[in-house]
Structures are given as C-alpha cells and as structure tokens.
Length: 145
View (cartoon, rainbow, N blue to C red):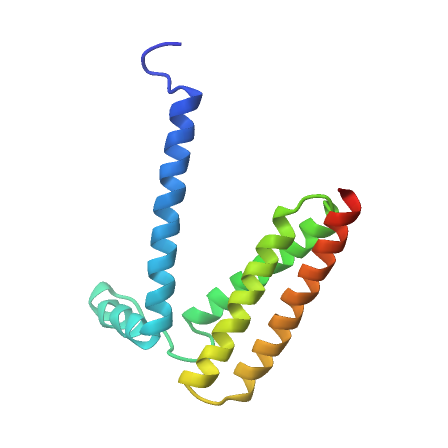
C-alpha cells in the first residue's frame, strides 16, 4: 500500500465519524424544525429576494411537503425491503422507529400545539403500524431462530 492510499481501518474510522456527524446534524435540524418551523422558512425567505429568489410559501406546497413526501418514500422503501428480505431485522426495526416517532410526535403536538384531528389520527395510525410491524417482526424472528 502506498503512502497516499487509505487503509480499510482508516476508511472505517472516517465512515464512523461521518455517521456520527450526520446523526448530530440531523438531530439538531430535526429539533429546529420541531421547535421553530416558521422561523426556518422566514429566515430563508428573508435571504431569498437579495439573492434573486422567490419567497417559499409558508403552507401548502412548501418546504415541509418535501420532507413529508421524503419520509413517505423512505418508509415505502423500508416496507419494500422487508418484503424482499424477510430475514433481515434492520428494515422492520427502522420502520418501527420511524412510525413510532411519527406517532409519539403526533400525540405530543396534539397535547401541546392543538387538538387537531389530523394529529390524533396520525398518532393512532402510525402507532398501529409500528405495533403491527413489531408484532410481525417478533413472530418472524422467533420462527427463524
């Protein structure tokens, strides 16, 4: 190996550091989106005109729609990967985490933000999906073991 090549061990260290960095960034950005969603859009809208861009809409076809559709794409892929690889335990666990987080956040916002039907409905639906996947996961895991 030449001096300029990076060893497998060093690549693994780089990979782990990058993963940890992404985890921290995603967590912070998620908290910002949760705690001050309107201020995020307002901040970028203030920068838009001086840079020659249009302001983003605050509702409807806005930024958070992108995130919602991206989330639905991700859970769709996880369900597909469960279908294609029923012995892999990573996919159902990730889906359980995603749907549980969505459910718990919906109930928390129902309590703290407003008693909207959409919050409680999403909390129930995503909670039931998480529970159902968890129960299926346990049955499949015990059948394989």
